[in-house]
Length: 416
Image 1: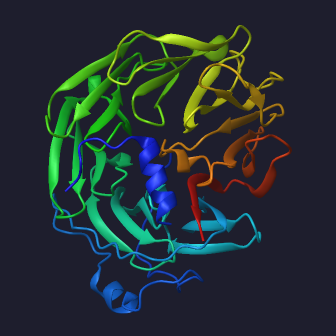
Image 2: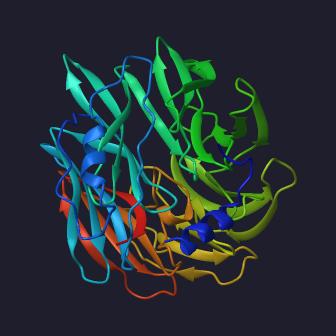
Image 3: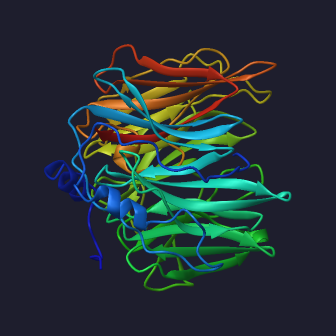
C-alpha cells in the first residue's frame, strides 16, 4: 500500500528521522557482510531469496529486511570493468572503499539507492548467444540479500528504471517487436502492470517519479532535446497528460513536488547560450524564469535542497570540445540569488550529475552539505572517468576515483 501524495521534502525528512552500455552477466553470491550491523536473522533470510530468473513475463516480490546504518557520509558508485561489474561505496570520513557486490562477466547499470539509504536497485546483464539476459536486482548496503526480481531477454529490455520513494513501485521500459512498453513492478506482491505502449517511432523516456503514483515522461526528437513533458499516472494507465510543450534541456520536480524546474540552452548540434532556469506548476501552467545567462548553455538542473538547485554549464562548440571557462557545476537559490561556482572543468572535460535517479540523495549527501560529480575526459585514444565530491559551500573538490577505459558512474549517497 502507498499514499497518493508525499512531497520530496517530507520523504527526505522521514529518512533523516529514522536513519549507454551493452550489458553483460550477473550470477555471483553477495560478498561478506560489511561493518554496518543487521538483524540476527540475516543469514537465514538471505538464503530464502533467489538470484535466478522468475518465469518469463513474471516478477518476484522483494525481500527487504532493514539494517542499522552508520553516521559517515558515504558515496555509492558503479565500476564497470571488462571482466566484472561492481557496486562500491566510499566513506568520505575515513577514505575507505568497500565492494558491496562484485559480479563476474557483468556490467551494471540503472543503479539507485532507496529513500531510506539501505537498499540498492540495479540492472545487470549477460550476453547469451548474441543477445542479452537482463536482470532487475536488489542488494542491501551490507552486501546481503542479493536477489532477482525480474528478467528480460528483449534486445532493448529493462531501460529507464525508476524506483518510487516508498520502495513499492519500480517503473521500467522494455522494447520488443518495435514497440516500447512502460511497465511497473509492485515489490510487495511481485505483480507487473502495463502502463503505456507506443511504437518505437514515437517512443517516450521515463524520467522520474513526481510522487508515489505519477511519473514524468518526455518525448524524443532526432538530434535535438525533448520538447514535450508528460505525466503518467499508475492509477490511469494508457493516458498521458501533457504538462509542457516547448524547448528545454532538462527537468526536475521541486523538493516538495509542487513545482517543475526546467533548464534551457541552445542545444543539439553543440551547446551554447543563452541559458535559463525556469519554474512552473508541477502539473503544468505558466513558467517563470528566475535565472539566466546570455553566455552559457545550462544543460541540466536538480533540486537538491528546499531552496537550492545544482546546475551544469556545458558549452560545447559545434565541432566538439568543452573548452568554455564557465563549464562546470554551479548552484543557485530558487529565487535566482546565491549563484555559486562549485567546479571548473578543463578542456575536453564533461561534468555530469547522476544519470539514473533525480532524487536529492542521488547527487547530494543526506545532510545536504556535499555533492558528488562524475567527469568524462576525452582524448584521441581513450576516455578517463573521474569521481569527485565537494562542499556545497564551495572550495576545491576531492577526487576519490579516476581511471582510464573503466566506467565509473554515480549511484548516490547514504550513511554507513
